[in-house]
Amino acid sequence: MRKNNNILTIFRKECARFFGDRTLVFTAIIMPGLLIYLVYSLIGSGIAKEMQEKIDKAASADKTVMMVENMPSQLAPMIDSLVYFKSGVFDTAEVFAQMRDKENNTIYVVFPENLAVDGRLTPVAPDAPVPHIQIYYNSANLAALQTYSTLVTVLNGWEESVANVFDINADPATQYDVVRADEEREEELDDLLSKLVPMLILMMMFSACMAVAPTAIAGEKERGTIATLLVTPMRRNELAWGKILSITCFALLSGCSSFLGIMLSLPKMVHADDFAIDVNYYGFSDYVCLLVVILCTVLLMVAAVSLLSALAKDTKSAGTLTVPFMLVVMAVGMTPLLGDGVPDNLAYYLIPFYGNVQAMASVFARQVSVLPLVVTLLSNLCYTGLAVWVLTRMFNNEKIMFGR
Image (cartoon, rainbow, N blue to C red):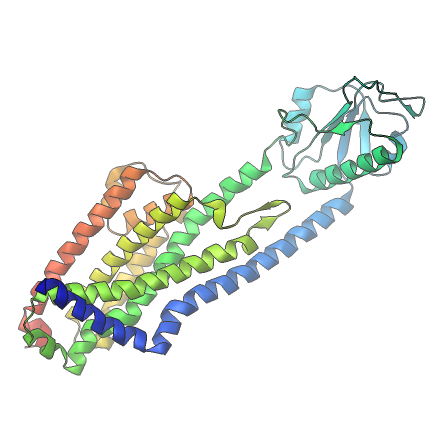
């Protein structure tokens, strides 16, 4: 009980010092998430504007080719004014193969036979099925997508002017969008997030650690207050745990702020046509896994920075010592950009920080596996415990603490 009270006392003391500095709280916790939200929102607005320009350009290009079967004669002039079309009977396998090419603007339309004869609609018996118009297109091609939307509008207007005599793409079992563009966009988005977001979170958490860890130990040595702490009736490992846990709390809040900024800005950044994402893009279990990975990552990071801070004589020296470590962490954070996906070998998750980055990447790629996450968590706890043991030994070394 005494041990817990000592750790809690150090924890409260450090937290009071950290959170009592309003400037530090704003720059290390609030500002990272706010900046990420503003920057990503601006980027999203630019992307949306560029996408709209491409759609407008595609619509004005008028290069779409429409292959039509059973073209009603009274519709031919109307469609001819919209787009160039070919009428006849086509090999569907060949047409679909062409349409899967994103650079191909082809649209394939199949009208029911005898939909209109001699310029008039064929009557439909009350008990007969409603004629079904099938329109196949590639939504990844902006020109084809724009032409498809225009064609549907024209056909619906024509239907309302005469009678309810046909349906468009009414069979739910048929895939009319031949490339499933939403699925492709989701895969591209997962790949983008898994490569960029872990690096950003790592950078923000490290910035928060750098804002408080050097002053927590090297600053105490510089002010001379470390001697008072070391002569108090507490174990040195209690002092080490109190310092590390307080810094972890502060850095974790910074990481959460950065994460919220990223997730809140994603709906503005990723929005095209009828495809958009929100906070429900990931499930509750994904958020829990990500929180666990972030917690163990920041715990290990704080322990490593605390060791470097204990070696330094003052805060300036601590900042100098942490620069090489920062470069290593940043390089590790960029590894998803160089890889081909989340690794399957569990040995990779035993590597400090590299395993953490891969675990975060697996969450954003929506490829979470329980075993790699458990290996990452346990290895991080072991490394942190080892760092605390080393820090305790350093507290017991007067040459390190007092420069003797």
